[in-house]
Every structure is written in C-alpha cells, then in structure tokens.
Length: 312
Ligand code: XIL
Image (cartoon, rainbow, N blue to C red):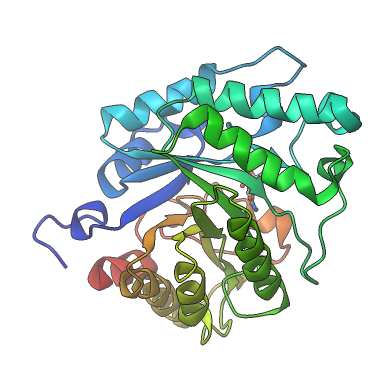
C-alpha cells in the first residue's frame, strides 16, 4: 500500500468503477468516484439504446457529461458498448441484411468519432453463449453471420485509429471453461485474419465461494495472444442477508482478483460494476443475492474495500 491512501494512488493499474450519472448530484458518491478511481465506465449511458434511440437521432449529452466528469478528475473512460444483443433500440434489432450492416457501421463510426475521449471500446459484448456457440441475436442477421464481429472491429478501428483499444467482453469467461476456450479460439482465428482486436474484458460477475483457481492462467493465455486484459465488470454477490463472516470472505476474494491483475503484466485494470450496495444491478438480476460491491448501502467502505487497498 501507499502513502496516499486511495485505491487509485496505490497502483499503476487502472482502478475503475461503473457509474450512473444520476448519482453525481450525491456529493458522497461523486467524491468517492473522483478520489478513489482512475477509470470510469458508464453503466448504461453509452449503450446503443441510450446513444441512438431513434435512427439517425444520436443523443450524446449524458455521455459527454460523463466524459467531462472524468476529465475534471483525470480519469480514463472505458466505453461500453458499441454492439450488444441487449439494450439496443427496437428499430435497430428489427433490421436485417445490408440495411442492418449499414446501421451497425454508422452507429460504430458515429459514436467512436463523437466520443473521442474514450480510450477503450467494448466493440462487441456477450457474443457467445456459455456453451461456446454464437448467440442468436439481431447481430447475426447482417448477412455476414459471424462475420459481423470482424466487420465491427474493422469499422471501429477505422473510425478511432490505432491509439485506442478495441475489446471483446463477456461474462463467465474469467475461468478456463467451455466458453473461455471458445473465445480463445475465436480471438486467435480473428487475429490470424488481421482483425484489429486489442483487448479482452473478463466481466467477472462472481458469487461468494466461486472457484478462482484457473483465473490467472486463463488471463495469461489471453495475454499470450498479445491482448491487453481487463477485469471489466467485477462484483461478488452474496446470498442475503450477508453475515460479517461472509463479508470477510468476500474481501479475500476481491483482494485475490485484484492480485491476479497485479500478477499479469498485460492486465490494464479492474473495474468494479457498481460502486455501492445501495444502487446495485445485482438483486434485480440474481434474486436473493446482494451486498456485491466495495461500498455498502450508505456509501461506507466495506471489508472488501480495505482488503483491496491493502493488496494494491
Ligand atoms: C447492466 C446494468 O448494470 C443495469 O443497470 C442494466 O439494467 C442492465 O445492464 N453485463 C454487461 C453490463 O455487459 O452492461 C450489464 O449492466 C451487466 C452485465
């Protein structure tokens, strides 16, 4: 640990958090985001439905508000996400063929150009199922099939140039399993074809007690492909109510995940998906669980926060 006792000043790795700008008016929230974190990701505000609610009608105001906050606080901005099967507007998901392909290219190009401060882009998010097969979504209906992925990376890179990182991102990929094996093969094939993929984001939505014994080796094999690595959406959910003992166990898991990033030179950073238990996506998505974040419902640091600080 370090003399300046904050997460962001204790490490050269980026320490990120998913933010919701509707919380910026809460002074405690914005002070913590600014003082503790060196990178921010918009929780929802850079997704396709937020940026292009109607075709050709781009809405960049909130995204720029987030970028302004980051620049005032000397923070990296991680862009999430250019394409996704979810949180895309209905007008977009109902298109197909050349029309859809043109739409996706226009979306990517316009967003990457406009939000030039963004340093990393999730170009595609969650394109595979847990069984390693391509997810069936509107994205497969461009006429290119799986080729939409290569097209999206080429389009993003053409718009944003070589000084940004273009990423794939998915959940249940942090360990060695069927899904991460499929991604490993897919990325390797695409790189061999000259597709400009720079990074892989392991979302890392964990449950208390999950086996992490293969996580570092998994990160290392992706790093060996030449990729930058992100732990892009870290949270560790607990069956509610959470006991003090469980919060201590959670703290050890958080510390371990940050240690993996410290151990792998290609790991660029760790982003916590939500700042605090009082505004969390977890209970709605995984009913009966919660208490997944570094800060509690009152924005007080939890054992997990202190364990991470000690580890950095
Ligand atoms: C979640 C947000 O946290 C929620 O507010 C929203 O309702 C749904 O999306 N994987 C991702 C993120 O890539 O975009 C998701 O964020 C969490 C899972």
